[in-house]
Amino acid sequence: MSKGLFLVFEGIDGAGKSSQLQRLAARLRAAGHEVLCLREPTDGPCGAEIRRRAREGPPLPPQEELDLFLQDRRENVAERVLPALAAGKAVLQDRYFYSTAAYQAARPELGLSPAEVVSLHAWAPLPDLVLLLDLPVDEGLRRVVRRGRGDAFEERALQERVRKNFLALAARDPRFRRIDAGRPEEEVAAAVWDAVRPLLEEVQA
Image (cartoon, one colour):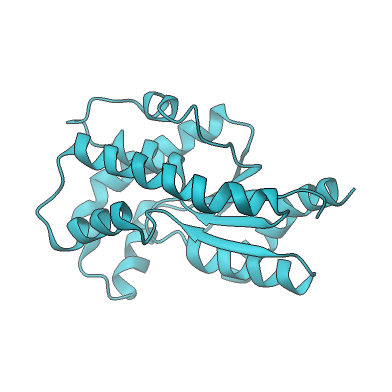
């Protein structure tokens, strides 16, 4: 590629982001592209603390959690995303600030809208494409349970608000491509490729 490409996968829990990201990474590598796969929260100190508290508790206060997400993201962008893009790599990332906006704004105790959370990221590089893997909440939660992550059905109300926030963000941002993630994985992968291919043609021109 003549320049880097920044692709972000978003969606509710169980939407298949990680598996579709790996499928796309394999296809890009097979075509000769250098690919860097990332996720947020990261494995750095702030990201690890977010994951630990989500897994073990006690829950982080909303503002403290948001601050940790912002710090983790600043480090990820500075240390990984921007250098990889400057080197002409394709950066594929599982969640970005859109997830923070969708999830944090779904917590009424924080008192922020999705747009207000997005506005805190004026410093962050915008992705070339946001692949929103969308499916009904009940199906997403069924997948989560099948993967052995416990009884996630208690989270249904939260996930409904998160999905609503994602769809609202997508309606306002032309970088988003909504993909029906309720279909078989091969069909979803084909839809992802159809969305990405025009961008590859642009950066290779």
